[in-house]
Amino acid sequence: MLADGPPRPSPSKPLPIAKPSASIVLISPANEILLLRRVKRSTSFASAHVFPGGHIDAADGPLPPLRGDVRLHEDSATYRVGAIRECFEESGILLARRRKRRRRSSREEEEEEEEEEEEPSTLLQLNDQERDSGRRAVHDKKIGFQDWVRSHGGVLDTEGLQPFTRWLTPAHIPKRFSTQMYLYFLPLAHGGIPQTLHVPTSDGGVEHTEAEFLPARQWLARARADEIILFPPQFFLLSLVADFLGPSAADGAEGLSTEALQAQREALLRFVATGDPPWGEKCITLLPLKKDGEALIMGLNEPGPELEGTDRRGDGERVIWGHFRGKDGTTGLKVGWRKDVMPARPNTTRSNEPFGTGTTDMGDTGHDLERVLRGPKEKL
Image (cartoon, rainbow, N blue to C red; front, top):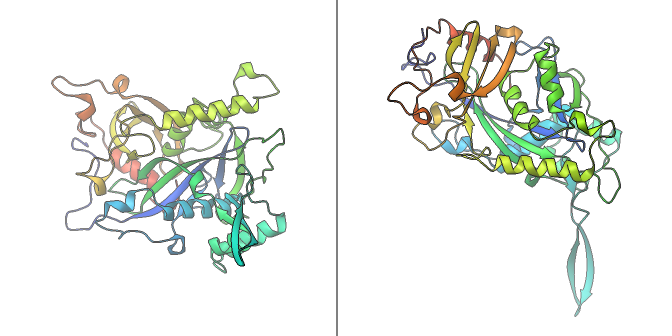
C-alpha cells in the first residue's frame, strides 16, 4: 500500500542522478509528428515508439553540476544542441539553417564585411551522401556535430526549438533522466514552393528500426488499438498536440491549405504559452495516485525531488492512466481531468493536494511503475 506515495530511496543512499537528455516533438510541413520505433532487442521499451532525442554529450556544451544545482533542470543552449544532434543521428533530419554569407566591399580604402542572409524559412540542404556520412561520423564521434554543420555552411537552428515540458524520472527508479522536451515546426511551403523535406530514416538498427511522420490523432489511434507501444510521456504530449494539429474528417483528401496549417501552429503556440506555469516551464514527474480496477492512475503535478522547495511544478489539472505491463509496455492509456478522476476530499484544496496520499490500496503500484521505467533508456 502506498499511503504516502511511491517508494523513495533509502536515506542512507544518495538519490540516483537524473542525467540530462532532450527530445523533440518534430512537426512536418503537413503538421504530422515524427516517431521512431525502438529496436526489439532493447532491454527496456523494446519496440516502443518514441520522439527523436537522447542523452546530452559533453561536446554539446557546458551544464551545471549533476547534483545540487536546480539550473540543471532548466532549458539551455546545451540542451538545444543535444536535441538537434540526437534528432539528426536518429532520423537524418538536420535542423540547421545556412550560415550568413559574407561579402567584402571597399569603403574609404577600408574593407568591411556585409552580411547577406538566406531566406529564413529555408533549412540547410544536403545530398544523401553528405547526410549519411555525416550521421555516421557524428555518431562515431569522429567529428564534432557543430564543427560538421559549420563545414557545410550551416548553423544549428536552436532558436526554432520551443520548450514543451520537462520530465524527471521518479526518485525510486535506479536509472533516471531529466529530459527537456521541445516543439519544432519544419517550414511550410514558401511562396507557393513546397519545402524540401528529407524523408526520415532509421539509424540502421542501432537504436531504431522505423521513422515515420503521421498525424498525432493517428498515432494515438494506433496505440489505442494496440498496434504500437506508447509510454505515458509520448501519449500525453501527443494528446495535447492532437487538439490543434492535423486534418479532420471535414478537410477532405486534399488536406489543409498552407494558411490553415499555419493557423493550427499558431493556435498550438498560444496554448503552450498558457497555464500556470506555462507549458514551456512545466516539469513533470509521473507518480501513482491510485488504482481504478486494473488501471493505474498517474499524477502529473509533482516536479521531482531535485526541485522540491522551488516554484517549479507540472500539470495539476490532468492525469493519465492505463495498464502497466512491465517491459511489455502499457495499454489502454487515457488522459483525463484530475477533478473528474480524483474528486477533492473534504477540507482540502485540489490544486495543493499532495500526490500519492490517497487511502486507496495501491498494492505494488510503485513497483509496477519501476518495472516500466527502469532500464538503460536514454530518451523519452
